[in-house]
Image 1 (cartoon, rainbow, N blue to C red):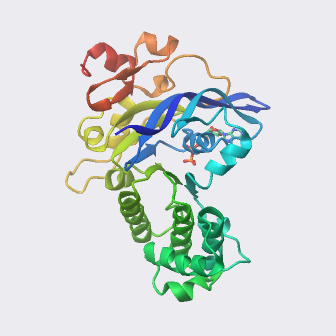
Image 2: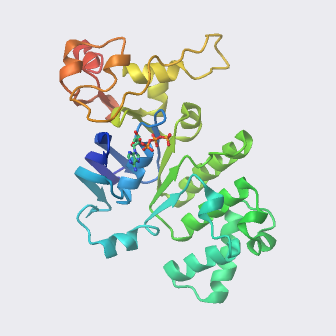
Length: 325
Ligand SMILES: Nc1ncnc2c1ncn2[C@@H]1O[C@H](COP(=O)(O)OP(=O)(O)OP(=O)(O)O)[C@@H](O)[C@H]1O
């Protein structure tokens, strides 16, 4: 499978009164058609900033300082804004964290889906109306005809998120970015939304990037996973490999911190706090929390080493131990 999106050595900084915040630092990853790539990490690890950067929506005081973004052969960082605008919301769609506030409160949800269908698929009013109802049905909204005539405030959070997914799919995107799409939803409703995303991804063949701080969500939903820590990519692997044999010390700590029904092991919290990202120096940003830290980790940023099955890991200790060979 060739990559639909390639992110290469991407860095984003924010100029603040306290100094330069390095929110994303040299991240390299790719997303392939038909797969769900999870991006996981603690709060503040740069997941949302990375998503904004992929959409080239980082606003001042933030700035993409370096790197490359290729989507369907286009260099997203070089495209004129008008061309990018045509890609955003069409070839690349976003399912946001806060569906209710992302919907227009003054327009019925059906009309909002209809508008996108008319705009992006050139449908006339009547065809768009019918297609909008079909889209609502596709995202498993019961009684879609009636729901289409309702406003966001008349729908539950889970229903609003289904409408947002319908709107994202209305443009037939090749890449769907879902930033913590189950935030604020009841656990079982959240699980149904993730299942829906998975099914729709399979049906449409689009690539999905799913941002979450929850490894349980990753285990249930994703094919591959990128682990981020303090703005840097720690590890990227197939989901089964990552859980069975986490290589990076941070991934190991994350995996140990998730509850397992089948094992009576006490949960182990991850030691230390996410480091400050202001005026950071070179080196690995996990060094102060890492049980395996070497002298080199303080001085030199670990390179992203390639292991079998397209796996990548950025860790001096792993590199020296030769376990990836
Ligand atoms: N506008 C801004 N100005 C300054 N710093 C910012 C700005 N936006 C984000 N940051 C910084 O960038 C870093 C990464 O933030 P980001 O929101 O991407 O984290 P996250 O992993 O998505 O966290 P969460 O899971 O809490 O959403 C944080 O340290 C944050 O303080």
